[in-house]
Structures are given as structure tokens and as C-alpha cells.
Image (cartoon, rainbow over all chains, first blue to last red; front, side):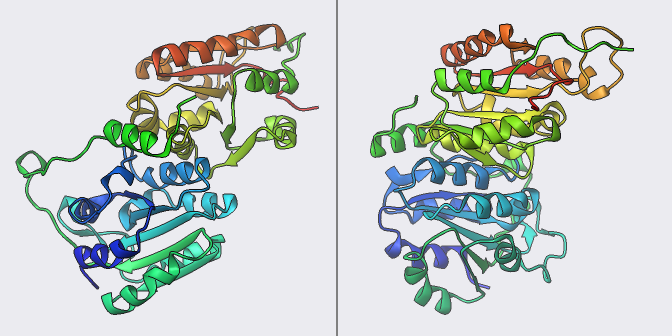
Amino acid sequence: MFHPDDMFQAFEPHRGDSVVIVTGTAGRRWRDISNNEKRDLNVHGAMGQTSSAAMGFALAQPDEKVVFFDSEGALLMNLGILATTAGMKPKNFFHFLMDNECYATTGGQPVPNSQDINYAGMAREAGYAATYEFDNLEDFSTSVGKILSETGPVFIAMKMVPMVENEPIGMRKRSPVRSRAETIKVIQEELGITVA
Amino acid sequence: MVSQQAALLKPETLIEEFKKNGVTHIVTIPDSETNYLYELMKEQAWLEVVPASREGETFAIALGLIVGGKVPVCLIQNTGMMESGDSIRGMALDSGFPLVMLIGYRGWNRHGVITDSAARYTEPFLNAMGINYYLVEQDEDAPRISVAFEEARKNNRPVAVLVGDEYHGFNR
């Protein structure tokens, strides 16, 4: 397993002009590492569905590389996205999975079959163009740049150190987060998108 | 015995409404009653069909498409709409974008007692979500689809079109 902060630090130099979308507890760490906030898009809003929204955006903007960091709890709620994505074959879609084997935001309870499930295998059999698995930072760091130059959809499963939260939700300290509406407005301006 | 409708809602009529309103993508889960409509949609060069795996996905994919500047329609059955509750809330209602959802009204009929709970709960579900809706049964009702688009754009909200044509079901 490796730490989400280290993973994002390793990814960031290869980000280029990618539109980056994150979800889950670990995904919040991206905000402090991103070097291009204008291309960070927030489309979360329903259980497990951020992946579908990210894939939809990739379909709408085929000339933009779309990098999505999913979590395994969210993916389990929306496993059909693997078939949906494989069917649509968005060449610009890179689906990273941060697998910490638990629901970190609710105290660290394990997800179903947390240690033996094979998400990359699921994506591969669903029909993704390529799939990868990483359980250490060194291998990830040396591979991520090349992976991002491939033709999508590509699925990258990563074993992540869980960042478990145990405090009641109302007592948690939250750093300010850009709202979904704000990130949408900024990225539409950045990419010159007009809502029809 | 429930008698059949005399008039048809032709798939070509729906395609025309989609074109008139600038629709670019149909995000859908096909069902047995809409096979011909599906085939017809696939034939249109200006329209991309996005088959989803579960109905809740359609609203999230639609949001991504809208953010990216496209004009999607979600085409699903009422059973799937009810399954999509959290997605409709978070991805459609809360997003503040216009969206027309075309909902197959399974179990609905004009003449007798509605026995299918899918139909019984359809309108209460939409009312609970605060989503306005229009019933379309035959070709002469089709302008209501454009009304739904106008309303969705005016209010930046989802609007539903209930397709009450179980007996013809867009088949040949």
C-alpha cells in the first residue's frame, strides 16, 4: 500500500493539461497538490455516481484528457460503470482507483471481500483498453507517465493506505472546498464551453 | 378488458422532437418496448446513443455531458426512474441545469384500474421530487416534449415526459 499524498505527488508532474476529477476521502488530498485548479472539476453528488459523470464529461470533450480518481467503495456502488465505459470506449478517459479496502469516511469498516477482490480484473474483463495494478509507490511513479500517454479507456488500480475518519460528521474539521457549481463555471470558461 | 389506443406515438415523432430541441445524446437503458426507437436513434448521425448499465447512471452521465456543453436526454422506464432517486436528487435537481427525462410509463392506462405499482407510484415519485411532468400518448401530444425543453431551460431544472404508450411501445 502507498499513501494518497505520495501517489498524487507522483502523478502531478505528468498531469499536463488534464482535467482532473476526484472522489472519496483520499481524493480530498488532491486539492493541496494540484498545480492547475482551473482544470480540477467537481462533479460529485450522488452515491457512487461521480465516475459516470466523469465519463460523461470525457464523452462531451473528446479532445481533453480526463483523469478520474475513484474510490473502491464508490465503484462498488456503481460497478456498471465499467461496462458502460468499456462500451463507449472514450479514448481520453483514465480511470484511477484508490483502493484502501475500507469505508474510510465511516470509520474504516471493510468493503465486501476487501482483500481478495480484483478490480483491475473486472475492468479488464469488462473491456477497458488497458488495466494496471500497483501496490507500491516506486512502481507507480515509474509507470504513471507512460500510462497517461496510452489510448483509453485505461483503468489503474492502486492499493492505498486508508485515511480513516472516526469523528462524528458534525464534529469534523473541513478545509474549504470549491463548490461543484464554482468548478463547473471555471472549467467551462477555461475550455470555452457554452451550455446549450 | 382494456382497449388499445387508437392513435400511435411514432418513434419518428420523438426523433423529430429531439432534433428540433438540439439533443446531442440519448443516455438510455433499452427495453423490449422501445427496440425500434433504439434502432432509429442509432441511425441518426447527429445523435449519439449512450447505453448505461443502471438507470441511476443516466443522470450522472447526463450531468457530465451537460457540463461538457452537450444536450442529453435520459430515456428510461419508470421503474428505473424510481431506482435512480439519489442520482436524480444529486446529479439533476441539485446541479441547476436543464434536463429532459423521457420516462416509459409502464403499467399506465387511461381506461381501467391501474394494477401495476410501477405506474401507481410514478407520479407521486415525481411530485415528491418536485419535478414537473407531461404525459405524451400519441403524435398529437408531441409538442409537449418541446414544452418540456422550454420549461427545463427556463427554470434550469429537470422536467419529465411520461410516455404512456404501452400498447405500441415504439415497435414497428
